Each structure stands twice: as C-alpha cells, then as structure tokens.
Length: 83
Length: 83
Image 1 (cartoon, chains in turn purple, red):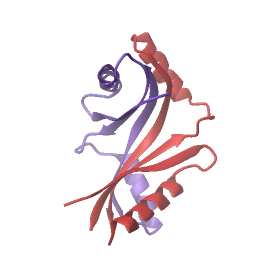
Image 2: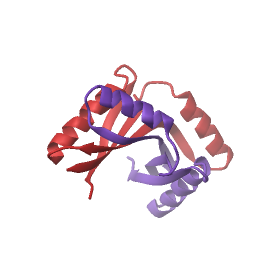
Image 3: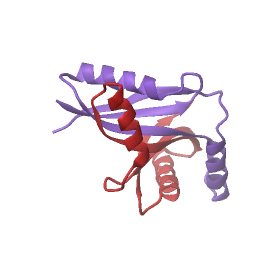
C-alpha cells in the first residue's frame, strides 16, 4: 500500500534560532503579535509499505536519520493512506 | 489568550525541489522506499489573541505574508491554546 508521510524536524527548545528571530522581527514589524517564532523543516514523502504500522516505523526511522540528534527533534506528524 | 500556531510552507506540486531530490537520493541509498520527497518549512509561534477564530485569522495572514505566492502554498496546520 502507498502512504503519504509528513515529518517535522525542528530545533530543540534551548537552541538559538536566528532564522526564527529574523522572521519574528519581520512579523512584529508588520504589527503581528507573534512571539518565540521557530523555523524548522517539513518533509513530505510517499512510502510503499505492507501496513500502516510498518509505514510509521519506516517514517520514524527516516526522520531519525535526517535529524541532527544534538540540535533537533523529529515528529512523524501525519501518515495517510493513498489511493 | 495565548495560542501556539504551526504553519507549513511548501513548494507547489509542479515546482522542482532539488533539496527534496537530494534527500530522496540519500534515503533510497539507505534502502528506504521513499518517493516524491518534498522539503518545506515549518514555523512554530506563540500568538496573543482574544479568541481562537481571531488567532487562526492572524496565523493565516502571517502564513500568506511569509509564503512566496508564485511557488509556495501555506497551511495553518495546528492551533492550540496555551496555558
């Protein structure tokens, strides 16, 4: 079966995020009341897998491979079956 | 009230994504059956707003401001009330 996986990779809470700070400055300059803006990566992919549990296991393993374990955390945000 | 908003900004389906291609190559080289890998940005932020509807409206407007309308699509993925 085909699955569509969404993986989020974000900086750990304590790690300084200059890109987030820059975006926060822009948003506040435009009058928005945004605080603690953090910028991370989102990965969307299609997966071929016999079951949803196996697809989730694969997605988690890939997220672990792609994230930097010292500075980042990963989440498998969504997993949907595809037609 | 304080809300935590998650915004996803991704390339439109037709747009070439070299970063996604590179990640796909790495994952396939490691033996994963990942296809059509797309890399985008995720923004997490805290918002001060009188109501959830207003927070959602603000988050959508900010997402629109930060995305490139020619190449990217945005989604307000999640909005949670904070303690």
